[in-house]
Image 1: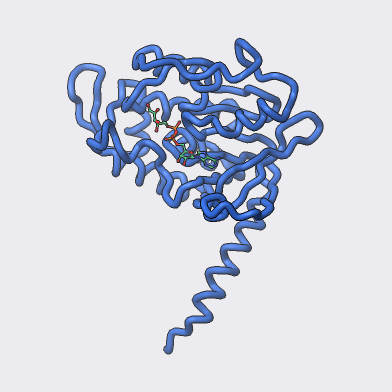
Image 2: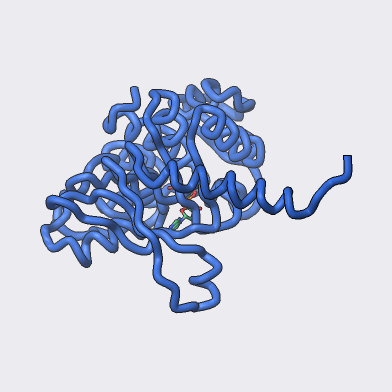
Length: 256
Ligand code: 48F
């Protein structure tokens, strides 16, 4: 059989558009494909929610690839190790309460498990706004990252979701938009984005799970975005909190 270039092009374009259209109306839309977003996506998809994730960069994984200072190892505590085990990610005990895993294995396995569970990821797409309906965050407004990088004046497109998760990390990009435009105040101590505190691994890992939740009707925060929005400290290259936060937000939204 002679391979036809046009058939290759049609296959890509038609399949992509079919899925893109299918995922314009979902149960949950996640902004950001770092460890928290991927973990949330996995548990939600496994619970049979229709869930889509938009990632600004070409690759998902966020800050996990680089481990600590590009030493590509991550550390997790006992509770984080339980989630690594659930995914089948290998880890080695360093000392009591500290386990070390390979960051490349961790990202690639989280991503693979989430996609196989049913999460649809659109990469190179960024979230630039939210849809508000009946006083609730009811969807996302997305555009190509390439358009953003080239500073092209191109209008975005909108999609509908019953729940939205801001998993954009330190930026807390979606909540920042909601804070600016929603006009009703956030469910935080100040009603605004409190901002993340300086490094404190123990407190950061604890508060990130506590801070995971709904901050405006229909909008949930997970991962580093939860501490950035609610005022918890950063914690550096210990990643158990990111996994636990992703799992918690999935449970709150109804992902078991
Ligand atoms: O930053 P990121 O890894 O967030 P996380 O899942 O994990 C945080 C840790 O990696 C690390 C840490 C541990 O101590 O603090 O930073 O909470 O992943 C966030 C992802 O969101 C994407 C960004 O490219 C990254 O991959 N992102 C950011 N803004 C947008 C976005 C946006 N507006 N639209 C789509 N994706």
